[in-house]
Length: 307
Image (tube, rainbow, N blue to C red):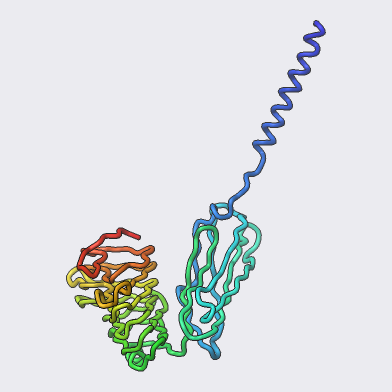
């Protein structure tokens, strides 16, 4: 064998071995996991919490973070949109053993003052919310609800325990009133809800069955606003509700029309789901058996699809 061959063969073998090692090393390198990308869902243990400034001043909310990659290191953030009503601090603890180990995230909510706060827990690009009502006014039936509504003063927060309320409710002339139910699957109001005082109103955590009423939920007064979270409004196929949510229209000063913000809610068997001077926010809202979705002050209809 020539000298050239004796040198070339070992050199070629070395090159092939080096290339194989390099490819193996590259192929075996673990890919970095983007925590934000692997979070598939975030959920909370309860849609609402009721606190007061006496004995029931704190509560704990549990959040479940589902990921597409086991063992992914995710950052979980808790925040309150109204620190003057309630604050929240987050913690994490391990539950289970071995392959069944799960990290449970908890938010401790502390009441600061009367009102409504939205607690948001987020991980990656997913989030979930819990409505916190800080109030001494908690009702459990239609009679108690009617009494609380009649006595409500401006800024009142009325919390509804789980159950079926056999009649609707008409709030007094008090402004800026909030109704907070235990959850749309937990609280049913068989009738209409009227915020007769207008102002900045809030409604959450209830199912409203208004039959063939003119409006399941109404808010009086030009320039008023309504925030709706986790509310189901249902008519029937034989007796559709004319308007699901009706804010006064065309009554406010220029630039001060009524505004509706609605989240995580649904309408079924309603002629027109919503009426207001403007829709300030619509997120995760469903429509089933509705002839129209939105009507403005001019009587014009707009379809927004499933938001």
